Length: 77
Image (cartoon, rainbow, N blue to C red):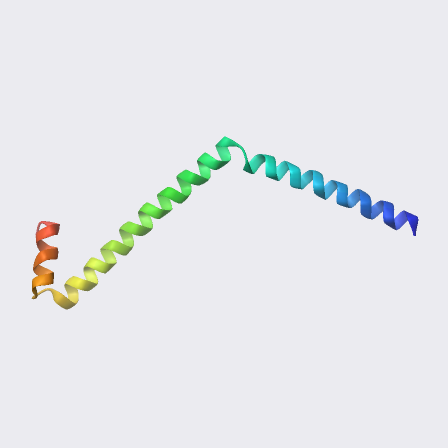
């Protein structure tokens, strides 16, 4: 029974050491910078696609109305 307990203790220690390494990596400036750039680019691309989709839908249904004219004027068409 003592042998199993030592094996479990060693496994827990290895897991804690690995966890500490991961936490140190996630707290580094380069990790935060890389993730910020990736999330920022994703936000910009996603916002652009959703805005284009929303404008297209509005123009499809309201092209001959005042709302459609305002959107076309903003878009410069």
